[in-house]
Length: 201
Image 1 (cartoon, rainbow, N blue to C red):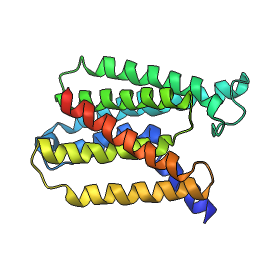
Image 2: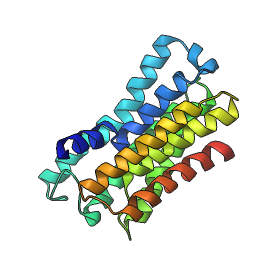
Image 3: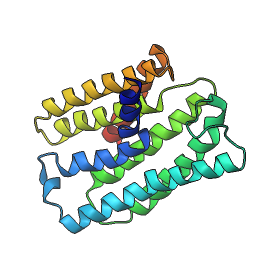
C-alpha cells in the first residue's frame, strides 16, 4: 500500500498540474480542440519545460549545496527557496506565453498557476500546506470554470477530479506527510485561487 500511495504522489505531482491543465483545455469539447496539433505539441513541451523540468532540475542543486536535507522537501523551512525558484520559472513561462498568438484561456490559466505557487510560498513561510492538494484543487477549478465559460457538460470530469483529490489526500495522510487540515486547506486554496484568476482576468 505504501508503494501504491508513493506512486500516486508522483503521478499527481503538483508541478505536473499546469501540463495536465493544458491537456484538459485541449480536450474540453470546445473550440480549443481544433487548435493545430503542432501548436498543441509545442505548448505541451513549452509548459512541461518551464513548469516542471526546470524547477525539478534545481532540486539536486539545492541538495548538493546543502540548502535542503532531502529531495522530498519534507521540512517546511527547506521548502521556501525551492518554491520561490519555482514561482520565478512559472512567471517567466507565463511572461513568454502571453506574447504568443494563442487563446487567452491558456495564458490566464498559467497566470493562475503562478498565483497558486505564490500563495503556497506565502503560507509555507508560517505553516505547512499540501502543495499536492493545491495542484489538484486548481485542476478541479479549471474544469469547473470551463464548464461555465464554454457551457459544456464536464460534470463527469469534475467528479473524477474530486475523487483524485480524495485519493491524493489519502496518500499524503497515509505517508504522514500532512494532516487532514493541511490537505483540506490545500485543496481550497488551489481551487479558489485558480477559479478567482480565471473569473477576474
